[in-house]
Image 1 (cartoon, rainbow, N blue to C red):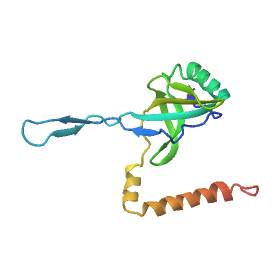
Image 2 (cartoon, rainbow, N blue to C red):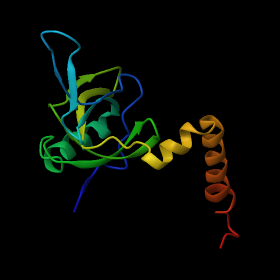
Image 3 (cartoon, rainbow, N blue to C red):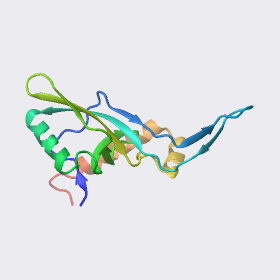
Amino acid sequence: MPVIWPTNLPLPSIQGYGVHPGEAILRTEMEAGPARQRRRYTQVPSRISARWTFRRDQFALFESWYRWHAKEGGEWFEINLLGGIGMSVHEARFTRPFDARPRSGTLWEVTSELEIRERPVLTEDALAIALDSDLSALFATVDRLHGLVNVSLSGPYSW
């Protein structure tokens, strides 16, 4: 059974958020001429700088989840994270213990770094379409279609 980020905890905030792809290229400097580079790996984990703001009750839940379900951060878990293609489910784990600091009143600021197995990106076929299209118009059409299907047609008279 996969470990899942608790739905009653907020996702990482945009402040302090960062995606840091791993290095897949091996570079060899030459005595003369340009350096040689080659692809070393086809799948390279990326790191995500993450920051959460929790209420006191949420922080208590997070600490317990981190200890028991995430096994002190060493267990892989599923969480929605932001990437180039928008919000999507990532398989992640903590790369170091979290850092928690009390903020105003009953708020806690928690920071850490997550490792994700694979960054969701466009497929090669989708990339070919995107390179040959007006990408902003394409995304606007997808957003309108999403609104039609998931908002307009999901009302009380939907199939």
